[in-house]
Picture 1 (cartoon, rainbow, N blue to C red):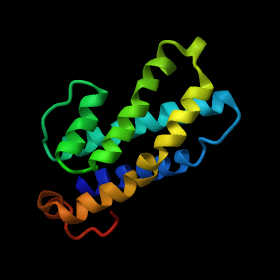
Picture 2 (picture 1 turned 90 degrees about the vertical axis):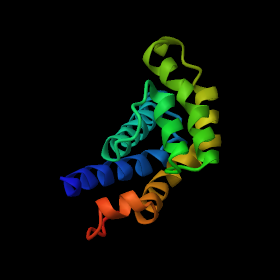
Picture 3 (picture 1 turned 120 degrees about the horizontal axis):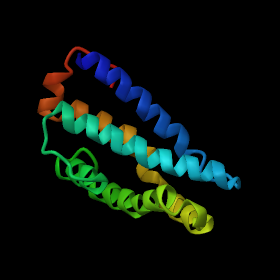
Picture 4 (picture 1 turned 30 degrees about the vertical axis):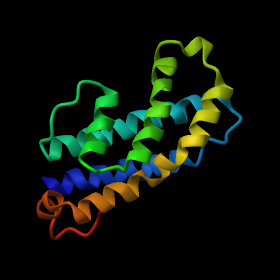
Length: 142
């Protein structure tokens, strides 16, 4: 079971890494999709980690990132960078007809390193957290 979860987790982490390279687009629809999916995929991976290690239940998207930071899956600097972009989810899902593309592009460019480093943070967690090491021992794919 854990092997399948790790396989899916790796696919999603690779997806995030690829999306993180697309923020420089001048196409506003592509930018919206990339930014929205960066947020959704990151929170989805966070929920997978939380579920796998039976951490406390998050109440919302911000809570997922707070739990990851508290459990030292991500560092405080990256947690802050994720927080700086999370606000855009509401804009992309509720105020989509009036998105300020230049401001969104600037926020994501300024904070994109958190998304680019997310896979490394997860890998570090798997290799160094005693609970993760035990749960995933014998599997070298993350």
